[in-house]
Image (tube, rainbow, N blue to C red):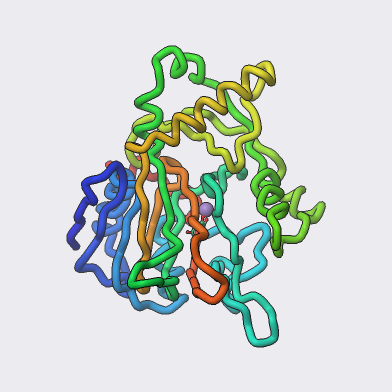
Length: 293
Ligand code: OGA
Ligand code: MN
């Protein structure tokens, strides 16, 4: 395979590899290292079916069945459908507003995710340009560029993350189709504490692990100070040199690091401009430092 870095803060294209074929252990190691180094990997022109897509993702760790789990492939609950398409009977085909706001997948979960994998089946196009880009920010760089006194202050601290925070923000938007979370869903995903700074299992380097989507407060800190620091961190993440955008093409498989990046889906397309993604969330369930050593 050929790995071609974007030359920007994140992103690489991985070419001359057919993901329909089983990955060798050597390929898995190469891809894990590349994921740590580049954060966002694009495998263009992939044509495998849903089963093979899930099998590819599964090599990197266990697959999560989403707690809200409204839309998934028949008989494959671990493959979610993101789409704004609607069936003739009016029923939506997929989740139509996934990820529209800066967040990190699964930071609200006690067990966190390593990576999310999307396979583009339909991409909205207008005037020859693709719409619905996905944006990323580099949390290795964001940590490195924090002032020393703040690094010191965050060391050993945890923050509370809550699934319901982002869900409710999305639900309050005009036209949202999201129902209120049930008590059972809330019980399954109670608020959890996560370290604010963690060692990335693929790079061995520190990352800033906080995101506007799910992070509520810094534990054990005066609420005013906690709010000030989180505001500062979220503004800091907005630095232009931390940003990378992926412009989709049909057939792209995109794998992104869910420990060392935050991301945001840009909703700049209309209901009749169709987007359709298969999605598999890879939980961080393997011994990655051993795999990349
Ligand atoms: C997600 C997500 C972004 C997109 O699947 O978790 O944020 O652009 N998707 O679809
Ligand atoms: Mn997401």
